[in-house]
Length: 522
Image (cartoon, rainbow, N blue to C red):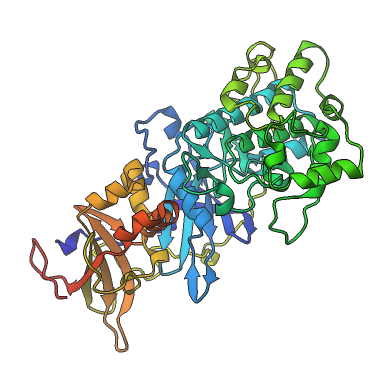
């Protein structure tokens, strides 16, 4: 194995110019950035190039903070792992694209680089209170949302957190007016689940968009939960306010939320086992019976009085689509594919398009963009090349470097622990990034006969100081921080099947100076 082939992994500031901060929360910070050169960027797996590649490319960089889990600093939550894993597989115009992933084991930071959305749908709805959305814009937004949901469902993925804040809209360039479904932290593959989904996460979907079967404790739910949320979003686009604004019982992990169901029953009427087959088998059904005794709810839907659907055939078609999205029984609730074929989109003018802000023959629609807060480079939570990192030749300044190789050979006995190699939360996202769809199968891992994890250290007076890590798979040098996301994802999603991979033999040794091959000492 040749040492000369090793290069220091690039940092974020090697590729991206940070334009400012656009958000901050408990998860971390989000920055707006642009690429120094599109040649440096990973290409979408679909490959190829087109004219839009020549546009200046802007990005949202989501920097994930580390947090404590026991004694360990953890950067990779299960939600982050799931989002990375799924976005490496999902490629559609109406699903946000994950361009790049950076893990810095020194700074204990994880950065996800997404395509930039100038607006989220919530912001557009708020601004439309002063200037209502035109029918073309509203219909085109809904049509694209449904196309994104339909694509995800065809890929056996439930979003499980559909709400206006998680729907981005591009406001510039050739993609102006294009919808992007985002924030897949709660998304899950639902084909033949190993266990009841309610046993995996007790609470999914933000309360105001949560389907009634979830509120009543359904243990096995379906993609229909996303369509209920889409119905709530549709009503919100029309009314410029939320349709079902219940108050959540704070600190409760129980699915039943009485005030939210009360808001739903007042608009859609009280469901019965006759109108919703299987209702009386749901764990929280007794609460429905009790609520019916406490107050009088409509026996039929009052949706037409709660939403401004408008007159004539167009209003009737809109109301019919909305009613089918907000159907109590998930088995009869309309699917995304069926909704896209509904007469509201297919037969009623104006025809929806993929560019919601530019109706043919009309003045373009525009909205205020989110504020970008200036940020000084020295205050950024990551380091660039000039900050004392080793050069491209792999040598550390101020001391002789030595190479320690650690081989992980699958299907052998353990000679030491994985923790002895490196912190799994600081190991590698790149197998997901570099190997594409094959990286998500256990078979692909098993067929890699060995992964050589190379750790370069600098000898000092006190103890070796870790400089950087590189993983070599075949001839490819990959930043070492980029294997753990895959391992963690597989361990979480596929349970015991991954144990064989994680319980691999660890052989430690020092690399020889031979051009080919390596010497190891157990």
